[in-house]
Image 1 (cartoon, rainbow, N blue to C red):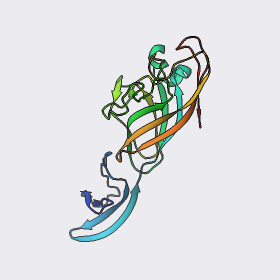
Image 2 (tube, rainbow, N blue to C red):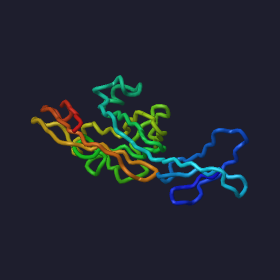
Image 3 (tube, one colour):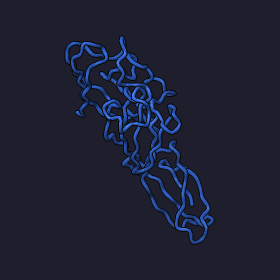
Image 4 (cartoon, one colour):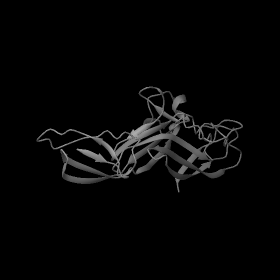
Length: 213
């Protein structure tokens, strides 16, 4: 059995035992999305073909702040989870995809850009926390029709004097963009949210309200 890539070149071959009804190829996340052709051969003779489109379709379903929804975070201390976020993501497509960066851009309290943690331009920093390993991971992979929760690792909702946005004596309103950088095609999936900071006397004592646009 041969698997042919969208550009017509050979991806790989598999020997299939007589009577077998399934064959598998490990695509990883470095494959090219598009239409693949499975070609059954016997020696030099083609005995059948079928095609399948492999195309990821990543969707951001939900985002919340840790201190407002601690029951949906990992089992960490209140201090550990307070400034982090969880993001529910689903791959509704037919091909696997990996999220390689979780970014918060714009008027998030402690954004991922130059006015915050500054890792947006560093592909070696994902900003994704893995509770099982208790560490930042390089990527999270989604199979077709798979849903997972991503956790931030760089405190995007922390109030840091001199960086991002902190509380003031007046209400503040703005927007931030949640962006997922992905592989195999190095594209991004993003959504923009309205964010409101309530008035507060201390720089870190206001209430945040996040709403999808």
